Every structure is written in C-alpha cells, then in structure tokens.
Length: 90
Image (tube, rainbow, N blue to C red):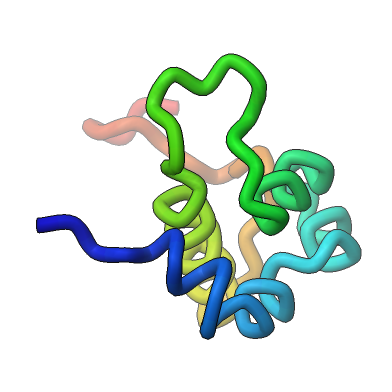
C-alpha cells in the first residue's frame, strides 16, 4: 500500500512545502535547480519521466532534506569539501 504523498504535498501540505522549497531559498542554498523544484510544486512530472506521478515522493524527499539541513549545527555547503569516503580516504 502506497502513502499518498503526492496528494498531501499538492493538497493540505502545499503551503508547508512552498515555505521550505520556495525558489529564493532553493537558489540561496545552491543544492538544487529552482526551475525543477517549481515544476514539482506545480505537480508536473519532468520531461522524459517514465514513472509517472512520482512528484509527491520527490517533493517529500526534498522537503526532508531541507528540514534536515536546517537542523544541522554547522551549515553544510555543496560540494562537501570535508566529505571522506569510508576508510578515511578523501
């Protein structure tokens, strides 16, 4: 059984999704392409999408990313200059 995240993100959670994923904030953070996010917020599948109506799943994942980034004590930047691979290799 699937969770109706598309209906939630485009319905009752629309304002909250917009608050977290507005174009100004997305541009400022620099992690994502604002035009792509705006398409998702309008409920549009990207061109060439073969699995239709995954808009809600994408919006939910991006929403959770932004919430998680907000609660980090040290702001993360892209690309992650200090990221290391497992085993301590850079």
